[in-house]
Image (cartoon, rainbow, N blue to C red; front, top):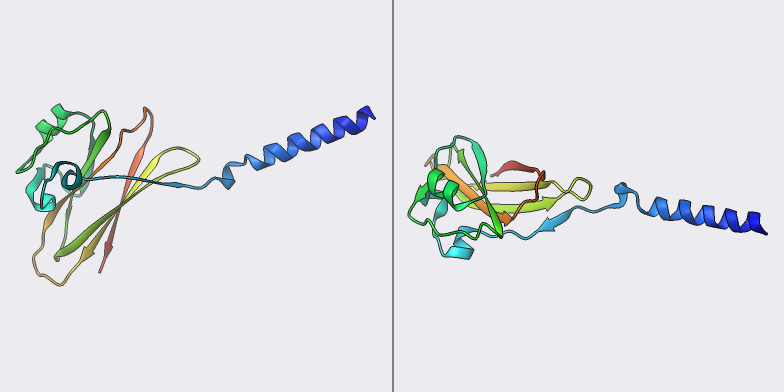
Length: 151
């Protein structure tokens, strides 16, 4: 009888551990916002300036925001709630729309920000500023920014 109980307990433990495999987790879409939505800024892709070329930075406080970003809308950002991901990207034609999607990796907890630029037929070759207010990042949490260009 004790052997049967031990075998049942062992099978339960194996069954429970197999349900906790990291392979079974699902990445999570994370809500993000923008300076337009939170602070009423307009036309930020042209009105915000940052000294970058085809790169981005993560700004975590108001002092760095004031030092690195210039433009017509410079609000006091709630950096206890948000981090600001801001970057520049140059193009050979015009852009009609920028979309953002933030995904949290279920295994590592790291973040992937997908920035999709939709090109149009305009012959203007802009150098655009993109940005997103993301939830405050945890210590040791990493962010990857993926740039996609769609026609």
